[in-house]
Image 1 (spheres, helix red, strand yellow):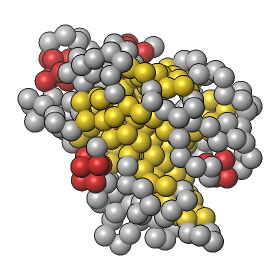
Image 2 (cartoon, one colour; image 1 turned 60 degrees about the vertical axis):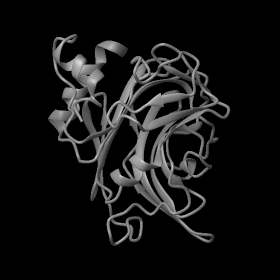
Image 3 (cartoon, helix red, strand yellow; image 1 turned 90 degrees about the horizontal axis):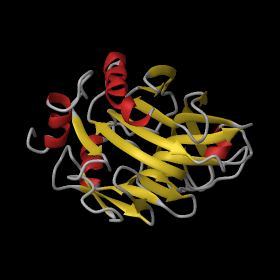
Image 4 (cartoon, one colour; image 1 turned 90 degrees about the vertical axis):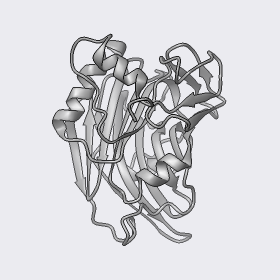
Length: 265
């Protein structure tokens, strides 16, 4: 594990003064600024620094030396299923993403920052972003859908830094969804809807098991918050994505934020 986390170890131990990134339980680290992750500018593969040998794929997006840019048309990043299947069974995890959304979003426009599953087939787990009257807002949700019904439950929508500025969103998942924005606990939701989580603890995602970052999936997010707006793919920059196979505590989330923020803010 220490070999696979070489870049993170260097960051923590040798080249960075200040808070250190939490590595206990880290199973996914996608960092385009790392040469070991992003070996070729303009490439389509991002190596997972936490489990070396597994990779993520950039679909249609453009990689540079430090970020992945997505055009808001059909771009996203997908994660190797061997990582996500092990991590989300049972459904106990932490997700974290650094992103900068473009300011071209119109009021009501909604996208997925992180998604596992499919609204149109069984449902899943999602972290969404939208423009609400000019405010950049995020929320996290579980959903369950069939051919004749749709159920969801999630956190309230939280206003974050404006469009065109970097933000960090971290979500912990177990019986409660906890949403952290820029290091601070902002919203929670206790899960109550039946069958969103199977009896064995797995997330109900039989329709689509891919974990996608900054993606384009379906239309239903606009239904959740009653915005009546338009679904569109993410348009902006992806800076860093991490996933843990456990729930991080509030002080650990803040520690990660403080360790990473100088890169983006």
